[in-house]
Amino acid sequence: SAGPVLPAQGAQPLDIVVVRGACTAAGIGLAHRLAKAKTTTLVLWDRRHRKAASGAGEVSAALQKRTYSSPGEEERADAVVMGKAFEFFGVGAPKCALVQVGSDKVKQASELEKPLFKPDEIMKSVNDNHTESLSSFYATIVYQPWVHAYRASMFSLIPPQADGDWCEDIAMATMTTRRLVKHDSLRMHDGSGWSFGLQMKDGRMDVNASLAYAFIVSMCQADEGTKHSMSGRVMPLTMGQGKQ
Image 1 (cartoon, helix red, strand yellow):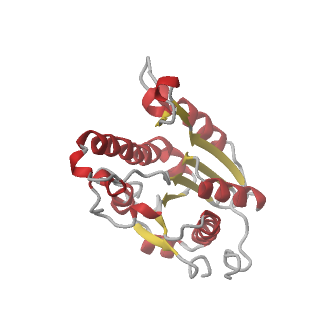
Image 2 (tube, rainbow, N blue to C red):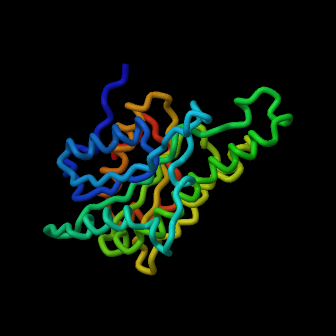
């Protein structure tokens, strides 16, 4: 069996990493590896909850159930996390990252029997999957002041089901996480504001967590020329990654 995937030899731990998004096994494993390496790790999960007894067994995103009474109210939790991230003071250039974790509970029309005869279920799946795109957009908008101030890199951890820019499954038509990475929307005139997609290829979440950790540490330690050349690209997480 393959051994653990490690960052480049001699790589130092990162200074601070913000991990947000879906609470998945890969995301939890990644946060654990960062914290174990003595990186200051701030975590904010999008919690999911079950409906009342009448809808037992159904799980919906908490984001869909909230009601906000004032503009910007939905940003408060992220604002608190970003405020903590801004408290970091270190020696030299800080090595920081923002990680957006995509849900591994992606709904697909191919999982339904005779999906074209179930338009309501398909449209519900489209709507649920669209929240993943919104969460990614939200992360870039809310955290851009910190990303630019600390010259941090953003990483999007993409589930195996979303392997492809234009998925043929109609339920995934509105998932645009990969295209958001390729848009490279955080880039500044000086070239900073790097964005990278991490496409999971393995069904074993512990392997994906190790691969993502190795790639993130290696890329944050890389020179700016390397970051410039790779920003805006979606990288497959395979056993060859992370040893640069």
